[in-house]
Image 1: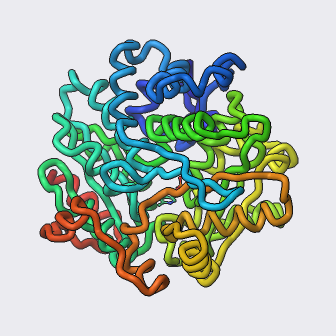
Image 2 (image 1 turned 90 degrees about the vertical axis):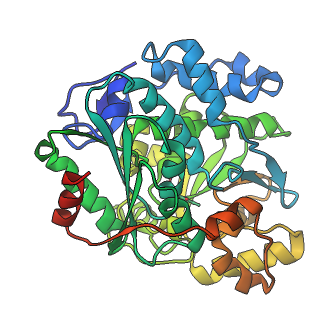
Length: 432
Ligand SMILES: *Cc1c(COP(=O)(O)O)cnc(C)c1O
């Protein structure tokens, strides 16, 4: 399997090169040359298969011979060695809980898979590998924990000062060792821009091998398909395919779901649930794709003004917007409605959503009101405790903080404060 660049100016590469490069040299995103099809027999047998076998079957064609099967099996096993349950909230809405990993958000899956693949590929590198990543909140912690203590790899994480939650900040600033946190005085787009500019001037860093761990990396993007297959394994009503609402920011997660569907997974419809950052919902309405500066919301991990992965969605649909609109829509949900949803769902169904899941639940409920014969899944992307600062005042109750988070909160923050100038970051990297 080869991956081509969405800008079509770089040569196609295999999974190993795509994982190491992160972004293609022409600044496009890597995309598989074809989408492997899973046979009907796979979906018929899915309920009796182990999670590891399902994930292995879903990913193996993308990896090809870049990783020997027994090692890939191991990586897959370690990637999903926590529960990914599908929990009923109402008669027609189920929550796919992706927050049982070490940093309590879905990004653990992609970060764990990528760190293990990269660790395998760089074993015999002579240069130190530096993973550079910008985070709107949850990527940082997941990448920090995924790469912590991986030999030969340094990790530099940029996050927007004051725009991530308390728990998120602790998860990425307290590990130390090979994990370096940079607190940028700007927003997520500034962080992402600084990372992009470093890659444009990578030749200035001869002694470093720079790569990214953002969701544009195929090794983070592709394994996100796993849990859509695992959701289907647990979906009882196999005669009616689910509608799936995905809280979306950079659109990597939903794009993985659309890829899984394109390879055969039965899904009726996908809803990208956005907060006030509504570039994609606006695009589908007006036909104009207008990136904007990100605005801060209570679902901060989705505060993205120029979603990187949307181009991959267009690629899946061969840039045919009417085809896309057959199975996909995107909506914007306000903070006020998000809070209302958290409160209502907690009061009426005793289920506590986090702000991101609540954006998804709101969008899904609106859709199901218009399509009463359908049933849906909301992808619950983070544990509500990660956002206790938002959730507690809304429900008027304290939430129980798990032991692991309690101890993270007690640890000392260690971050380098930086203006949103690429030169400041360059100086930092030169001193690594
Ligand atoms: C990152 C994140 C999102 C957005 O995911 P994308 O793949 O960027 O669309 C949604 N919810 C949470 C909790 C996140 O951490």
